[in-house]
Length: 151
Image 1 (cartoon, rainbow, N blue to C red):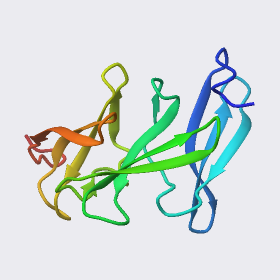
Image 2: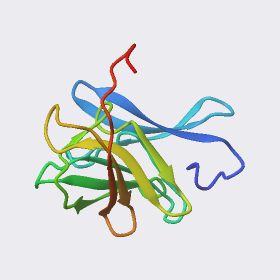
Image 3: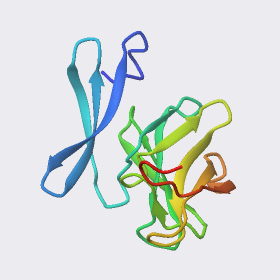
Image 4: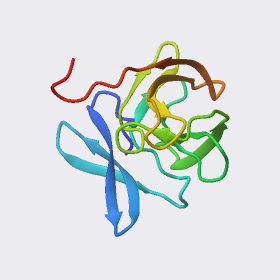
């Protein structure tokens, strides 16, 4: 039974290794620790790191660097069906902060996903807001670079 159907349970979705070079999403009942289901990627675009729950659509959502075009991919996984979807976010950003975009925050009411991104490897980081409904960048704010023990 999926977490979506068991609303009274606490459920977490985690990115896990499903084998060498294979990533999966695991649904875990946090009240029992029981693994409910895994969703194995079918293709490189079927990967979501930094998972966020989008209650409006009942999906997990995240962004990853695009495999097929310049920009980012807004990727979703519907845990009730196991169906993955990907929409291109046409933007200058091609690199994500953290490890493939897991440094993120989601405003569920406004359906806005916030990530740290850069246009080039090692380029200046920016706080980027992606509108989940339209798959567009709706705001970008430069971030100052401060190393550990500085400023």
